[in-house]
Length: 261
Image (cartoon, rainbow, N blue to C red; front, side, top):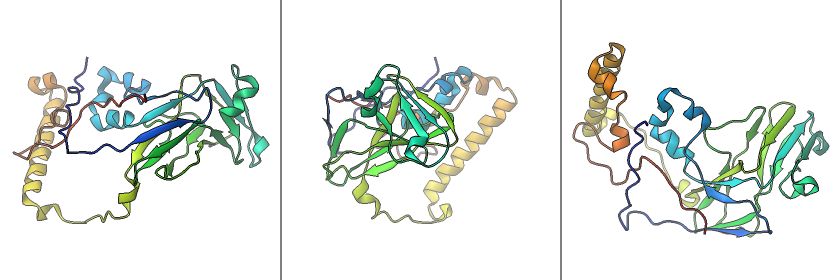
């Protein structure tokens, strides 16, 4: 087992206020919504699962909810911009596949129906996208930011073919990934450019981290026993600042979102 950190600590009351997320089924048999997984097959296949040592990667994987296909979907794109240039079929849904996936826009775009109307707290939107840090051959997910704090309509999840051919989605696979974004605040954010030297304390912390990182990597290259035994530096996983920096107010090394009730 690799060290992927401790379970998330409970957040101190009052530090954050969770926005609301309501998922209204539009029809019977709407797809399942589940907390997103941190695991990826390609990450599992890395030597000693080293890809999971990048905590931001696995946290991103799990920072949302997946909508799962209720049936298999096979789409074939023949090239061209017409709606009929893309054909959609299903081995287990038959003629009902149109309730799940269709060719609607043309231009090699495969359209999925999530089956829900979502509502969020004021100022919060849903970011709709494909599953993070994953990929499919010849087809890519398109992303959208939906103002779900006021809309009384649903949206579609769209994938665009990059070249002619067939793409297959299996029953139970995620076809849509949703997460929340503070849409109402983004326009008021004003990025600030500054030199790191203008912040002596922060610079000292960064310099200490850089020196520690260089020494550790040198030790690994030279096969020094202590560095080899450690394997990788775990300060990020543990939420340990460098050079006496302040401990973080909030830190997680794993994410487990709640399932819809």
